Image (tube, rainbow, N blue to C red):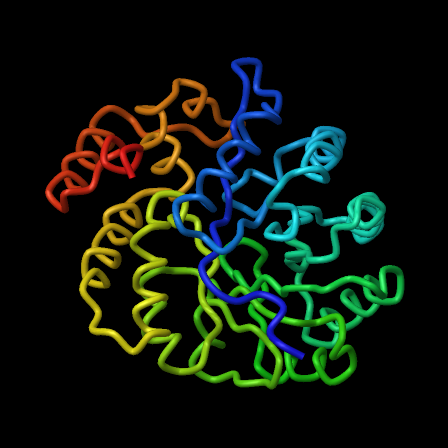
Amino acid sequence: MDNIIKGIYAASMSVLNKNLTLNIDKTIEHAEMVIDNGCHGAAMFGSTGQAQLIPISEKINLLNELATNKYKDKFLIGTGLNSLGETINLMRVAQSLNFKKFLIMPPAYYKYEDSDVINFYTKIVEAIPESKIILYNFEKLCGYKFSTGCVKELVKRFPEQIVGVKDSSYNLFENLELENFSVMPGSESKLLKGLELGCAGIITATCNATAELARKVYDDFEAGKKQTVNEKLCSVRGAFEKYNLISGLHTFYKKKENLYENLLPPLSILNKKNEKELISNLEKLNFSINSLMAA
């Protein structure tokens, strides 16, 4: 069995109307754009897509539209839900539309151990045995950090369902190697090193902007070619990392279309000072929304 996911994936952004409802057409259009710009796929309703803040009804409406999309097989569906029951219910809706690949983070707020995490995913697998699950390792968001032992145990128990991990805590990608299991760091700065260690690629927020650069680093590595843009890729990531990534990306993209300035509270776009600083730092790297659109 080949890796279920491999390559460059964007944690795709959600585009909102002025009244803060989800603009389904624009959100799908954005996901198509990042794929057209070089991503192998896109994760819908990850943390970058404001998943924890968007109503389930709006997510279901988007899934219904996404089900007929030309890139349907390139999408991962994030749950963005704390409730086990709601996670399973949303997965059932997605499964009815023939989506099988899911990005799932353990619940936030509560404190728990590895054994509790194993129990959480066990309940999901038992309910949706046809699912292909990418674990989401991001301690800053949920308060829990996967151990290598926990991941190995989950893969041992459910080799057909637990197929990968997005590692945004960065404690796994250098220490975890499992057959037919995709390890995907959550930053472009970890892409090249990860590939050298045997990782399958990346899933990142800033690939909404860096898709073309990240894809070239990936393709050049696969082809055994000299790396020519990795330094720029990492510098662009670094420029965004000085701020909240969601705020920075929406501030960047509002130069393309005003709808991107709409964020669900408590999120907001960058203030004028930080916006000016971000755009200036990117321009110093010869990176701008205009050059991105031209590509």
